[in-house]
Amino acid sequence: MPRWKPGAVERLQTAALELFDEQGFERTTVAEIVQRAGLTQRTFFNHFGDKREVLFGLSSELQQEIIGEIAAGDEALPPLDVVMRALETVADKMFEHRRAVVAHRYAVIAANPELLERELGKNAALTEAIAAALRARGGDPRAAYLAAGLAMLAQQVAFRAWTRPGETRALRDLLPQALSSLRATLAHDPEAG
Image (cartoon, rainbow, N blue to C red; front, side, top):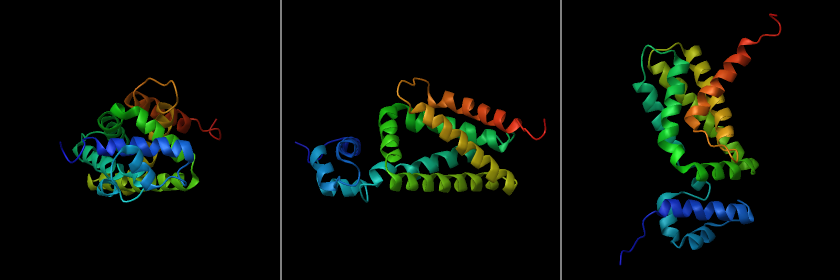
């Protein structure tokens, strides 16, 4: 009989999300998470630094994937389009197959001000990393930062729609719609008309 069981990360995430729902993030302990998952605390700490990392552990991988896609992107495309294509590709690669877990994670974070603050901080850091990747491609620093910020805003709008109960469209399909709405909002200048 093997000494370890496969799927430890997924089991720990599932157990943690269930407990966060049942008793709240603050009242859930690592000991309760590992007991629910049928694993040891050692296994938990091999994968996560603390219980918050169950929710935020993929952030660095997400950032690396997006930056890699931007670096490999078509040099002829405008910066905003490069970032949006990167977000679409990474959405397929990292999110679509685990939609229920990602949506559940988002609900837990949205219900806790401390976690929401951390999520916003991670999004700000990702925006900075995207802008740096665009600058590394030879882009204008101001245009790079604007493109990164606009793409992240469109991503957040699409992500909120994607995580709504009953939504069946892929995040990849919601991203261009969010960008289109953003462009329409920017094009409407009440002082010009």
